[in-house]
Length: 270
Image (cartoon, rainbow, N blue to C red; front, side, top):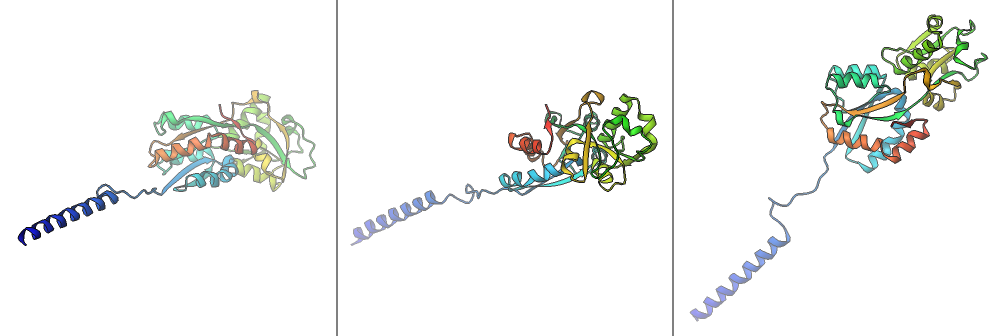
């Protein structure tokens, strides 16, 4: 009888050991079992005002493939955005409408140098209100006394204004036109002045003239009259999400995104 109980205890022990072993093989211990999660990330992108429509159109495409990354945009004049970054604003990615502003940040070690590249290009155009009666066909005609107010970007902070002054300077008419200038704090405010007919004409990017049905484009500035219009992009050195910022920058440089930019009138950056 004692022998029988002995073998019974042995059998129970073996069955218990097998059961525990089987359980542990099916469900790893809490120390090794990790539930896969995606951290929610918010990116702040400061971008030139002229990019607003195209980037807002691209936003759903990016977030559909990167649902854990939410992008917040800050659109303004490139010079204004540069100063905000220099003053410590929380920004992850910067896209300027000229090299000058990005050069300024790079000189102060405020960007991650190996993330800088020229993302896009653009051109400069002269626009007038859609119902304008003025017979303007070239930049030189802005000297006509009938043209009283010309809207341009403030050249110290708005690259479009800087390019406009270069065009007028190279045409030899800048001094004649300056008394007529109405300065805008971004290229979109310049466009708005012409749309509302508060200005007889304005100088904006071709992409801005394209999106508005309240203005008509008169003439495109020859590229040799101004510095190349490029849009450099870079991750900010103080970014709290540099890898996500790199991912978003790579998306903007992708073939899919470049096609959308092209639809809005932008050219390639390289």
